[in-house]
Structure formats: C-alpha cells, structure tokens
Length: 592
Ligand SMILES: Cc1cc2nc3c(=O)[nH]c(=O)nc-3n(C[C@H](O)[C@H](O)[C@H](O)COP(=O)(O)OP(=O)(O)OC[C@H]3O[C@@H](n4cnc5c(N)ncnc54)[C@H](O)[C@@H]3O)c2cc1C
Ligand SMILES: *[C@@H]1O[C@H](CO)[C@@H](O)[C@H](O)[C@H]1NC(C)=O
Ligand SMILES: *[C@@H]1O[C@H](CO)[C@@H](O)[C@H](O)[C@H]1NC(C)=O
Ligand SMILES: *[C@@H]1O[C@H](CO)[C@@H](O)[C@H](O)[C@H]1NC(C)=O
Ligand SMILES: *[C@@H]1O[C@H](CO)[C@@H](O)[C@H](O)[C@H]1NC(C)=O
Ligand SMILES: *[C@@H]1O[C@H](CO)[C@@H](O)[C@H](O)[C@H]1NC(C)=O
Ligand SMILES: *[C@@H]1O[C@H](CO)[C@@H](O)[C@H](O)[C@H]1NC(C)=O
Ligand SMILES: *[C@@H]1O[C@H](CO)[C@@H](O)[C@H](O)[C@H]1NC(C)=O
Ligand SMILES: *[C@@H]1O[C@H](CO)[C@@H](O)[C@H](O)[C@H]1NC(C)=O
Image (cartoon, rainbow, N blue to C red; front, side):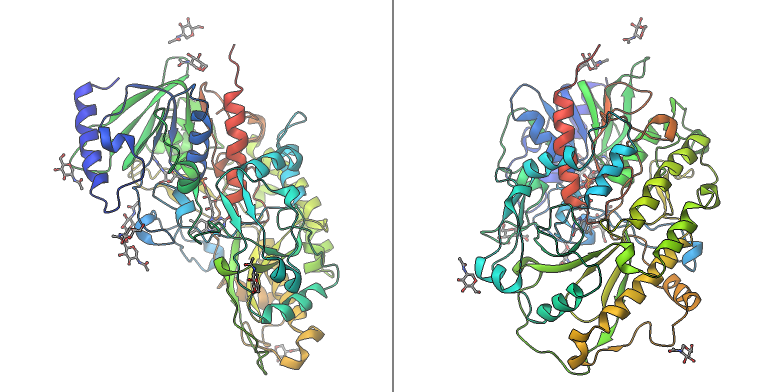
C-alpha cells in the first residue's frame, strides 16, 4: 500500500478539483469526505456506462463495498461536447487517402452515455449468436442468453397510440423491462410527415423486413426510441440510472482520477489499483486494495491501455514502451472494430413533398432501415461473400498478429461470411429523415489496434483504425450507394422527382464508386468495440466466458471492449445488457 500521507493529500486535491464544478453532484461521498478507504470488495476502473451499471448491481444487496474510479468529472450539462470527451486523433489511414480522424469517446461521470446520440437499438439475433459461436460450446453469450438482460436493463416507454397507429410504430413489450430507470422512450410528438413516403419507399424494396419491435433482434424497417426520461425529456444515461438517486454507504465514486496500474501479487492475482489525481500539482499516486476483484470498465480505448501499462498485453508493445511483461496476451488492444459511415449521399427533391416538420430524435419516434447484404446488393452479395471467404486473413491483418490471433480471425471470417449471406443480419443502417441520407458499414472486415505510445506510455494511446485495409470494406460501401440509388428511384418518389447531387451520376462504375468512398468514409460512428475480446485464448482472446482476464486472477473486464465482433446497431443498449449479465456472473463467482 502507498503511504497514507500521500493518499490524504491526493484526495484533498481531488476533492477541491471536483467541488469546483458549479453544480454539486447529487451524491458524491468521496468528494464530501475527501478520503478513500484502503480496501473495498470491488474496485471498478471507469465510471462510465458499464462501470456505473455494475457498481449499482454489486452494491444493491448491501453485501459488498465498491469503489468506482473515474477519470472525468461531474458535468452539469449533457450532450456531445469536447469538454466531456477525450482528445485523441487517430493514426493516418493509408487506404482512406491517409486521413486521420478524431476518436470520439466520453470522459465524465457517465462515460460515453453522457455525450452519445441517444439512439436506442439492438443488433440482430445472428450477431449475438456469433459471440457464442466464437466463445465455445458452453457459452451463454447468445441472443437467448442476453435477452433477459436487455429486459432487466432497459425500461420502454411505449409510443403514443394515435401516433403509433398513424405511422405504423410497431413495438412489443415482451422485449423490454419496466424496472430499471434507464429509459428508451418514443417521445410524444409526430414524426415529420415526409417520413410516411420514406417508409413506403423503403418498405417496397425487394426483401425488406418490417420488424415487430426495434428490439426484437430482427433487421429491416422500424421506428426506434431514444434514451430519455419520458416525463422530462432529459437524457437518460448511466449516471441518472445507476448513480444519482442510489444513495448507499457501500457505493463510492472518486472523480478526476486516472488509474494507471493494476497491482498484482506474486501469483498474478489482482490485489488493487494505483491511480493519480488529474490535478497535476499532486504527482503522488494512490493505491487502493480490492478484496475480491478489480473490474475494468475504462472502455474500448482505455481498458487496453490500463492492461498494457500493467504488463498485460503483446510483448512487442510492452517492450517498446519499456514495460515489464507479466502476461503475454497479444489480444489486448487488437481486434479493434467500429462502424464506419459516409455522412451524406445527397439528393434534392425536384418537387418538395411538404407536410408538417415533426418532432425528430427525442421529440418523436424515428425511422431507420437496417439492411442486410442480400437486400442491399441482390446482384453482388454472393460474389462479395465468396471473395471474402476465399481471402487469406493475413493479407489484411496487422503483421504483428500471432498464429492464435490469425486463427481467431479465421473463426470470425466463417461466421461473418454466413451472416453476410443471411437475410436477417444488418450491414447498412440508414436513419431516415429526408431524401438520400447517411450510409454505414456495420460489419467492417478490417481490424485496428490500440497500443501504448512508446514515447509516452502514460499519455494518450495510439489508435489505429487500419480502416479499409480489407478492400471489401470499400466495395460494401459502393453497394450501399447503389442501394440508395435504387431506393431513391422507387415509384413512391416519382412525383417528387429526386435528383442525386453526391456522388453524382458520373460516379457510376465500381472502381469510380470505390475511389469516391475512399475519400468519404469516416471509420468511427463512435461505437468502438472488441479491443479485449471474449474469445478463447488460443484464438487470441483476452477474457474468458466469465470475463476474467487470461493469465491473471481476480481481474475482469465488463465494457464494450469484450464484444468479439461488432453488432449491427448502435452499441449503448448492448453495453447495458452486457454489464447486467456481467454483474450476475461476478456475484455468482466461486473460487477454488
Ligand atoms: C459521441 C458518441 C455518440 C454515440 N452515440 C450513440 C448512440 O446514439 N446510440 C448508442 O447506442 N450508442 C452511442 N454511442 C456509443 C455508446 O455510448 C458506447 O458504446 C457506450 O457508452 C460505451 O460504454 P463503456 O462502458 O464501454 O465505456 P464508457 O461509457 O466510455 O466508459 C468508460 C469510462 O472510463 C473512464 N476512463 C478511461 N480511462 C480511465 C482510467 N485510466 N482511469 C479511470 N477512468 C478511466 C472514461 O472517462 C469513461 O467515463 C456513442 C458514443 C459517443 C462517444
Ligand atoms: C490542485 O491542488 C492544489 C494543492 O492541493 C490546489 O491548491 C489547487 O487548487 C488544485 N487545483 C485544482 C484545479 O483543483
Ligand atoms: C446547472 O443545471 C441547473 C439545472 O439542473 C441549472 O439551473 C443551472 O443553471 C446549471 N448551471 C450551469 C453553470 O450551467
Ligand atoms: C461545451 O461545453 C462548454 C463548457 O461546459 C460550454 O461553455 C460550451 O458552451 C459548450 N458548447 C456547446 C456547443 O454546447
Ligand atoms: C479535451 O479538450 C477540451 C477542450 O477542448 C477540454 O475541456 C477537455 O478537458 C479535454 N479532455 C481531456 C480528457 O483532457
Ligand atoms: C397522442 O398524440 C395525439 C396526436 O398528436 C395527441 O392528440 C394526444 O393528446 C396524444 N396522447 C397522449 C396520451 O399524450
Ligand atoms: C502464490 O502461490 C504459491 C503456490 O500456490 C503459494 O505458496 C503462495 O503463498 C502464493 N502467494 C500469495 C501472495 O498468495
Ligand atoms: C481473490 O478473490 C477471492 C474471491 O473473492 C478471494 O477469496 C481472494 O482472497 C482474492 N485473492 C486476493 C489475493 O485478493
Ligand atoms: C457514367 O459516367 C461517365 C463519366 O464518368 C459518363 O460519360 C457516362 O455517360 C455515365 N454513364 C451513365 C450510364 O450514366
């Protein structure tokens, strides 16, 4: 343990830093008391979406004490704003004309859930079933195994019946819960009237499914809710649902504190963590002991950093940063994935369809089309999938990948090939607000890395999307554009004479489209996952089926980094469900 003196000094500083914030938090024991204890049952690293969910669950019976350590501060306001986010710029992406991108993730109490876009969606059944397949025969991480946790974790506030009838907003309460105050709500206003013709045109696309509920695990056309508190319209996020209003003596949170090392005993059992105050005048780190478990919830970008700084990770990265290797675990910071998108395929109406403007986002139900490859590209999906299946994965994976990691990717390749052909998984997601719109690739085949900066391991990590290192990712985007063109050419739109502005009629060959998308793709829709995957160790995984980090004891991961493959939908609801399941797993642990 660190000297008690430095502990007191550091916390005094943290207390001042945090209480300097204008709006006093509803509940902040540590800030009030300006002291952490030496020992807790559990220490959770990161007070974000998953961290606060699990903190709430582990303390609700009163049996255990929990300390959550959060880098960010309490914020009075919510919504996307750089003051509540990390400032990270990616490595250049050679296949995207060497462009660099800002890496958007939350840094505040509530984590990314305080800044996110509030869209509430789930992936499709086969996408969760893939997690089981990539986990092993006894895995419980499939759609059936997660559905109870989607129900437990999220309360649906159903749409207004009049609006639901008029706009065909389908929902089914069987997929939702009523207890936990994390809300998915439809708003009480009408959508824009133009959405009716968008709906009709999309519904007429050959093979388009109409889902029975936004959370039923189907793809296709549906109206989705947003994460807001129905009565007040205010953001519903991890802090409002799992921290504010749960006053418990056994649930503590320290803010403005960065964990930079996990402490181990000689047998690689995690015994605690070391953190330091963001207040740089105080350089002394603080050590706190965990009696039962250290739980990592620092998110996809920083959980690998905490592990690598602690000597758990690929030796080539650790050696480069001058860190002693405790466990050679190549998967830490590999297998990194995100959705990618093109913000705008631009069309103009020749004749404006008119109608009332509608509520939009939090104000009303919102329409989305989740489209699988066979519907997206009836002519080319088979050829694209076959080309992918026949690829040697080493042709596009990082050179540093070990044989185990290549084998893990090969397993993913088989699952992905099946899902690309499947009519019931999602590849493109189109939010429908007007003509044209944004397009996405929800299953990029390329894989990125997150590694320590050898020059400054304690500073920001190096985020390398390696976007479109597999050229099929560009081809899928080209197929997305062809889909938008067919959709915009549908009979429903004829009276409104839509005209394509971007990319424009002269971009009309596969080669032309591929070159165009190369200059347009943004490799993150703010949904980073996969950098500490739940897969067998012999397939390059980081955590086992019970979320324990390989090669260690009493150390687990509960955030978005454990998803072995990204789902075809925005990620927050899945993060809540994973965290709910993780909490049950942690509570049920038995030790030899
Ligand atoms: C701008 C944006 C828009 C998004 N839009 C949507 C959307 O509309 N719908 C949707 O479903 N999803 C959306 N997402 C994604 C979704 O919010 C995330 O997938 C989810 O919140 C991730 O949860 P997490 O627990 O893994 O990480 P986070 O919630 O990010 O929590 C990680 C926490 O760990 C803290 N931390 C990091 N390093 C350390 C350290 N060393 N020591 C202590 N603490 C540390 C961070 O400050 C952070 O609070 C969006 C995300 C962003 C950023
Ligand atoms: C940092 O700590 C010093 C010493 O405790 C204190 O004087 C100063 O106000 C703190 N700074 C912030 C931003 O809290
Ligand atoms: C903080 O939020 C409250 C409402 O919760 C508001 O009244 C107040 O003006 C806000 N303060 C700042 C500084 O934004
Ligand atoms: C971002 O946050 C800062 C600090 O809270 C605030 O001053 C600014 O107005 C915010 N910007 C936007 C666009 O909301
Ligand atoms: C990122 O930059 C903004 C200023 O634009 C700052 O307010 C914020 O604290 C920075 N985030 C971190 C994690 O340092
Ligand atoms: C539902 O929406 C209709 C039409 O906008 C409105 O007249 C009605 O008051 C709403 N019902 C409720 C219960 O809010
Ligand atoms: C580590 O394991 C060895 C062998 O089981 C045991 O003798 C020793 O006491 C353990 N050390 C600690 C700190 O628990
Ligand atoms: C590891 O966790 C188990 C179960 O909670 C606990 O009994 C044991 O003491 C822990 N080991 C250490 C070294 O803290
Ligand atoms: C395709 O684009 C080229 C210019 O790039 C143009 O000459 C040709 O007419 C276009 N073909 C079609 C069918 O639009």
